[in-house]
Length: 308
Ligand SMILES: [Zn+2]
Ligand SMILES: [Zn+2]
Image (cartoon, rainbow, N blue to C red):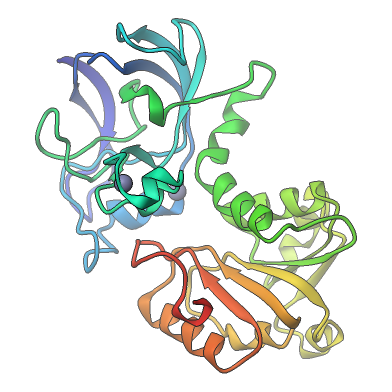
């Protein structure tokens, strides 16, 4: 066991403060990473403020952070993927059972024994796991990823959560050149969604309530920006999208977007939704020819009943 510097919250109302935390000594398959950058995800704020108390109550002190990029400083004797000096990154998960159907299919995020990067039981040291608002972390090599040396490391960190959260559904639904993709909201997830949709060759339309975000959306690769409060602008796009990515976590009118997609198209809700919002998505799926799929977070089970 060794000490690492960290920022932690001691209650749902206290600001983050400097602290010192324990990290485990390396086991056979562990790598130790000096953390160089860590993104700030909205989930960090939710958990520090204990806003998911119904499904995932926060244990204090809480050290958030799951968009971690750094350099390997030590490796366990059986580690094969990394050597000292390699760049490495850690996302939202640090362990799973490795034996269930989800793990066998490479979908560890649905493992019933999944261990998240922070605020989950720490089987090595007791207490809960601590995240990336720290100068060091120890993780089994299976849950560490390589980072190309030519990337801007600060810019790469958000790929570990916001990035994969938006990239994954677009790949799953084969978003390709010539398709029309809508990205609803332009925050942490939305800006990644725009970049991916644009890079995949899709005609990319951003929906935002804020006129002020228009320039940013265009700069990030949007072909068009729709101010969602403007009914005329919305009407122009009725039944025209092949795929929509909903990145808004606040309560909003999902039904308005149901009318935007072609028949048998998909809307994926990727932001951390309230359970009322998820129920609404499921209901809409059942009563329309559009598949709403959520990657509900906090986790309430994979997929949506309307899609099965
Ligand atoms: Zn996140
Ligand atoms: Zn599993």
